[in-house]
Image (cartoon, rainbow, N blue to C red):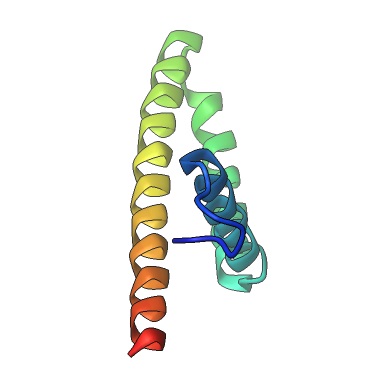
Amino acid sequence: MSSPFGPRKKRDQDQDLAATIDQILGADPEFKRLSRRILRAQRRLKRLCSPETWQRYLVVEQITNERYERVSRLLLKYGLAGREMKAKL
C-alpha cells in the first residue's frame, strides 16, 4: 500500500492495518457477543485449572491470537491491495 506522501515504513502500514481491523471488529455486534462468551468460558475454565495449567492455556491462547491477527492482517492487506489495483484499471 503506498502513501501520497511517499514510501511508508512497514511498521506504519502494520499499525494502519491493525487500526482498521480494530475499527471493523469494534463495530460488529456479533464479534462483541462472541468476545463476551469467550471471557465467560475462560473464567469458568480458570476455576477448574491449577495455576500452572492456566498459564499453559494462556500461552496457547496467545499463540492462537497471534495466528488470527496474522490471518486478519494478510486478508485485509491483500483485500485493500486488490481494490487499489482494480481502481487503477
